[in-house]
Image (cartoon, rainbow, N blue to C red; front, side, top):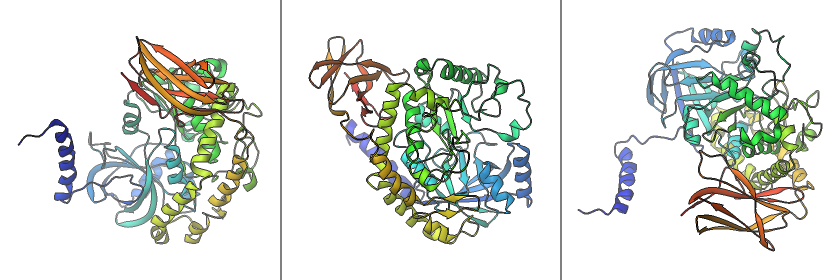
Length: 533
């Protein structure tokens, strides 16, 4: 039988799709948000809780071997440890069994992976979130604008005792880095203080900083150890981090040579609009990674969303907790207004007028995509329906079933604070941000973007109205940093730029107005136009 090449490409994946079903082995997506995974952990030691607890409290990252079943598939010699800071210590102090776990498939068996090729499973106990919705919603929103983890839920048993419903969140590890950036080999920094390490060190000779805020604390890597964690193998990562921090604080006008500024602006916009203060923005200035991508620029990666969406009330500016009204009307320019030296990644970037306008445009995009149209609420209700019965039947949940139902609409006590109701937060915040003067008035609009081949290069053309300046931002491929150039006005609303000596590139447009800047594609630079001749 003759099969044409195009038909081969169709029949082979079709056959591979059918094959698992024919043998009853169709694999399930570990992070499919429409289903709940099942994870069973078996330890040989009856005192496994004491062993894991002792290791965690001592600051050790040693793991206890276990047999693990993920959706019925067996994995031997999986390394297990407790994870987290407040999500571990606070429930532990109250005698709760439901503590967060970190499972590593290849801890002893090289190249062993969980379904989907994942090396690590991170299970969170939904601490300080009676709604059970904050983590999954936050990651879904973030993934539209930046590389971010996938997330769903898992039912967890330990030695056949049911521990309840957990958040199941994709780790920022080698698999994640390879998936999003094509390589796992470059410098990766976890920006989350390890307080067990810090308590053992003497920082008296170091300049004072503020947690993982990227304040400059001298050239000695010792001063940064504990505040940051080097995830990659090479010690040169410390030097690269310090060089980045020094540039950010002393020559912020050159920061584009070391950092993906647009990715940072998206992170700030996301954190601000959804009021994710358990982040770089808030009092603890943590819960993000920095990865040096193939273009030699550091890119931020958000992490740990269990108290996003207003669940954390300390922003690092006000001495006490923010009220509900202060969360609802949280300023887009927090830290920047007072030029807070403890948040240089905000203050030094937003001091640049173009960066500030792009940031405002990104904030408006998040508001329009998720808040103004009620999309977040529709998704929240879908997730709540999916997990309702499992939350009701969770024997170890940290909060009541009634709290789970109520927290979608109104504030619920967590025993430490109050988790603001999601509707309570977002209905008021949508109104506040939608009426912001920087969002309204006459703003730029990109009407058309096109490219064409010219002799020896590429011509990019765009039609834009209400813009003061229009920029083309382009690169040859992911291994090259973007270059930003000012486009020329051919006639009213028509802008163009010729790129010599290129036959292919990725690009986007920035239209700068007097209040904000808009990008085309709107989610650039995470999404770009591509051209190849």
